[in-house]
Length: 329
View 1: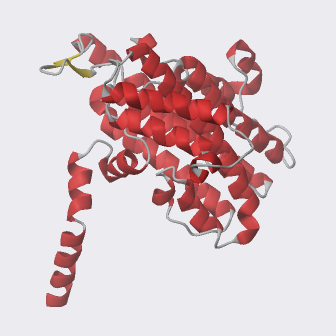
View 2: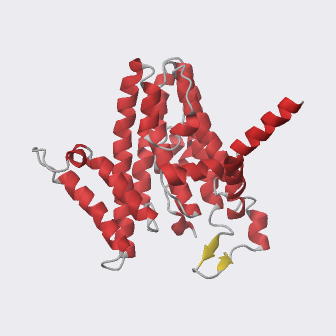
């Protein structure tokens, strides 16, 4: 008994920081890690946007792990569930949202008894709903590793850092093509993310000479360097070898300085198209054994009606997710 108590005390001390973050940090420990190792999100809308970026980045990767028709069905179901939980979070956020003018915090004027009765899930449930999204994301990634018969620390992969995935893949070299596919998606998502930061900088027009103005200038410069790069390698070799990575770092710096980052509807759609293409690939793989299978792939707009009840539901979810929260209020 004494040994058990000593062990329990040691575990409690070692886990104290983790427990404290689960108790008091937005998104719990995973939110804390994501803020510091992936992308800082200071408000509900930005946290939804971070989930959308993560979905666009990880769904194509998980699709590439599929090896059979049954894998395709399970993976499609996992993506559909992640869509559903993000949509749930998206719908809840505008109701009873908190806002601050820098001095005073107020509750949204729509937080009335009638609104609470008609919307059982509101921004006051955001942490619980975000936990459900995290669980769905975890389950989707775990499905990918199950497809590959790999053991991996999925929570480390959730930081969005490709180096974490590289460590897993290098233990199974036959999976290098999966990694290459993932990194191509990572480059696309990074460029879309960088463009969202450029757009946010233009809309907020930081004061010339300010730290924010300089940070936004670095993002613009990173895109110029990407588009105007030359064949000759000189000067900063590392920067010339990784111009897309430079966009991520510059964008990350602007957000860390307080840029009120947002995703426009157009850029959200660009991200969700990547998920939709992954869903279509899964559908084709599943139809090898089940020609009637309709998964998470949908048509935008009214033509989604052709894909059956599940696809219509997902279509509605995607259209809601693709619409910036500000337009829903």
